[in-house]
Length: 628
Image (cartoon, rainbow, N blue to C red):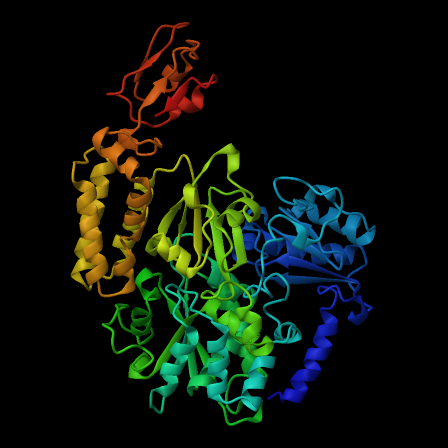
């Protein structure tokens, strides 16, 4: 077991060891002159970063500099669109889309001869402009408007080394609360900070803790909800992969605050890297005596266990999650009683998601006022988003609450690819809503998003361009919730299915007058009567698209036309007579002989025969065929 004094010694030595990454040359180890950080997040790993790291190690030996350069596996750097990512410190040179063939050149040119491999350097300063010379990472377009708090260690430390976490003031907050603060004081600091749950509706974290503390019981639990199920979301996964000790430390602090001695992390089995690193972190914390009996020699004991989920979206709902941990089918329970009163195994339980917990230790270390100074009055701090869809820079971003959506899309995300126009952004996943282009300057915070019919959710942000059909988008998210419904309550089981049936008819050209009103009526009834959050929020994508894109619904129903040309049953492939050269290539490529004409004269598509496969568009060399 490590004492606080021993932990302080480890911290001092570890700070020296990673000082190069902090660009603190005065405190660095003179023997190691450079650190090469290789992204070990899921995205980069799938692109071969493990092999890249192995080749780096071999190349260092081959060039005789293995004692001067340290290769470090990290978590996600955030800019997933340009992975695999490699950063060389102390220069801070950001190499993007590195391949195994590039490693030798980086070693010989940069690490041996001190010359950058310019073709691999990420130096975009925003607006698609390249810098004239070397540029700091926080001055590039993707990073300059971010404020990495929950992600502070992701891409900075080796997540499988507890000493590196300790070097960044890890477990300092836990030592502080156990030796200097009462449980009530801990809760008071978190309350004053304004920290709200980052997993959905934004319930104040400290209020949840206070309810559990006030509940009288000999046994209480702390649960981390890492069952991240929204399509396109990977915020929690990235924190667990890049900074797992931050979650463990926060769970221990929460346990001390409410009087719990045991915690569970409920994490998706589809996150093998996150699960592996979390398991390593837990074992390391146990070896140091940070988890277990009498932490730091105090009378506080706490341990953490991992429970794997099987991919059921409904288990992201807290009562269904608890039911799953107990070994039963994941179904929600009626509330009240709330988990803080009667939760896991019938005992008082607090449930916080990964991102919420990632903020806790920093709030204890830096104070409530520090955290509250970021964001807005009612939405303090920062928010992490998984930015995806029709955007140039897909990846993980963290911004101050209240940052305009425009900043995220145009500045951080680099805008829409291929010169297309921004049409909408979906926040909150299947539980959220679509924000139209007319509201692109909306501040991203809890209150502002709710006011326009969307919600923060866990942090998925899907960007859509002019080619997206909003009726089809609503159908996509409703298909997901229908498939993921546990079926326990009638409004969700039958109501959402009925809504999906109507949407299917509309997108197949069989919509009828009154269908929009039927959708609205069903949606409002489901929201009012469903048992849990999944059902209560399932209609949101439909309601928000009707609210802002009603004209698209009407075009589908009245004109049997999909304005975006995405609904296959309503699509029409047209040959422009002015552009057609009569080469006959499209007719020869058509698999169903739906194109007729005479060579050197304009061809025509028989709409009754056309199967809307798009082969004709792909084959036309003159851009004469379009989908309408």
